[in-house]
Length: 374
Image (cartoon, rainbow, N blue to C red):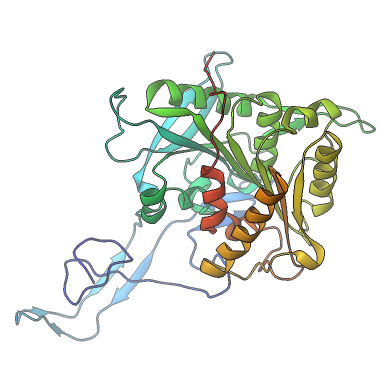
C-alpha cells in the first residue's frame, strides 16, 4: 500500500493497493508472466505472444480504515495490466529512409530530455537487441519477455547512469538479426534489412535527442548478441563498448575479427548453453587473441555461479574487471558453471544485465573518436 503506485514503496496507508500475483525464488524463472512462448496460428517458429489478462480478486471481509471508513467486501474483475517501467518507454515505428523497411521500437527518454536542447548535458545511448523469442509486431515483447533492456531504465540505474535506452523489435519472425549468406563450407553471417534499419534508427535518435556520440553502447542477448557483434564489425566506430550475452554466430572471417580486436567487449555465456554453445564464443575470443587483442577469461574452474545476484554477483564482476585492468585487457569472457543458470542454461542474460558491475563496466568506456552520423 502506498500513494506512489511504485512496487518498491511500502506504507501503512495509501491510495494504491498492489497485489503481487506470483513470485519465484529461482533466478530467471518466468512465473507470473503474461506472455506465452510457443507457436500460434500455424507459425513456423516459436515466439512470445501476449496473453489476455484476466484475474478475480475477492475481498471476503469488510475493512475499517484508520479514519473509520469502511471498505466493504467486494469482487474485482481485472481485465487489464500494466508494467510500470515498460510504460515509461515511448512507442514508435521507424521507416528506414534507404530501404523503406518498417521497424517498431521502444525508447526510454530520461526526464527532461524529451526534446533536443543543446544547452543540456548529452547522455549515453544504450542499444538493446532482443533474442529470437521476442520477434513480432506487438512492440512489447522486447521489453517484457526478458527484462534486460529494463535494467538500464530502472530508477536506481538511472540515478547512477542516466541514459537513453533503445529497444527495436525485429518484425520478421522467420529471420534473425543476422543471416548466413555463405556456403555450407564457409558461412558468412551478414547484416539483414531489419538490422540495417536498427542502425539507421540509432542514427535518427542521435540526431533528434541530446545523445553523447562518444558513449553509444551495444547490448544484446542470443540472436540480439549476434546482431550487436555484426553491427560492431560492420561499424567498428559505433560502440564505445558492448555486452554480448548468450551467443555469437558460428563463424567470423579474419577481416571481421580484426575490425573489433581493439574494441571493449564483455562476452558472457553459460558453459552448458544448449542453444548457443560456449564453444562458439571461445572460438571467437581465440580469434581475437590471434588478431592481437588482450583478453581475460573466467571459465572452467574460474567460472561464475549463475545463482548469484546483488552484491555477490557484482563482486565477481569487479574482480574480473580489476584483472582486466591489470592485464591491459579490453576483451573479457565469462562462463557460468554448468547447472547454475536455471531453469534454462541459455538464459544467462538474466544474471548478466541485472549485474550492476557489468553495467558499470559498460558505462566506464568513452569512444576517443566519437561516432558521427553520415
